[in-house]
Length: 151
Image (cartoon, rainbow, N blue to C red):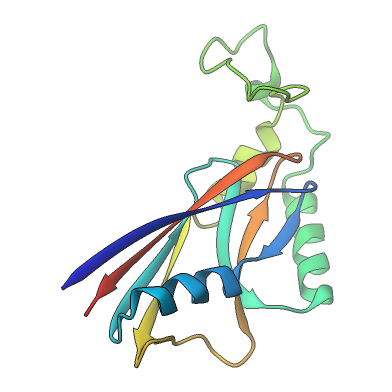
């Protein structure tokens, strides 16, 4: 049994960006030479999700609208109320603010990670499936942890 862990680094461009990271993950899987196992794709961020879905502009736009309708940016969030919030006030260097209550709430409806089986050295994604890192906040430097377990 072998375990390989790698980190991908990106800079997201905007709120509700769907970044297709499938090819980057495929490259790591191929480099490991693992034939059978699984790959975990994990976001260590509380405002970026990892999802597997179809790569089609309409679906990404539709889901962004659904998220923004369910949990709009312009609502009141206690997380953004600095007269009440006293925890975790250190912002990422260069960030304009940390008033991102909507991003954290959206993340709670989504996933932090996805696991994809590996057979014969290939990820077993469906014909239309792709792996996305979904930015739920503003443009930021992001990391994605990819861990492959198998033989």
